[in-house]
Amino acid sequence: MLHLLKLSKTVVKTKEQIYAEFRELINMGSGELGKWLYSKESKLVDAEPLETDITARKAGDRTIKILRKKRFELTKSNFDHMERVIAYLPKKLAERPEGDISTSIWRYTLMSWGHDPLKTPKL
Image (spheres, rainbow, N blue to C red):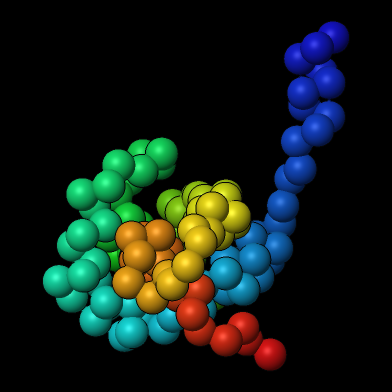
């Protein structure tokens, strides 16, 4: 019975919902993200262990590939990554440190995934 209760709490999202949430969270373009990933500052991120199964810079590379694709070209693997981004970024955003974040590892980690917390929200 407990197993059935767990299943009933699972929310199944459509591909359209996943894509929309992903695009809402990612506020860096593919070129901007690519340039960031090759900066010396971005290399500081992977020195800090993450609770995910992939490094932040590798996540960024996957995000770039998704951003460069047309919607109909996206694969199951792409949607799996988008769901990982959707699960990870809000948790990381909630861990915002006190003070100036402009050169923080926290910000650099988010940027490596494709979200710059200093950018103004999309309208």
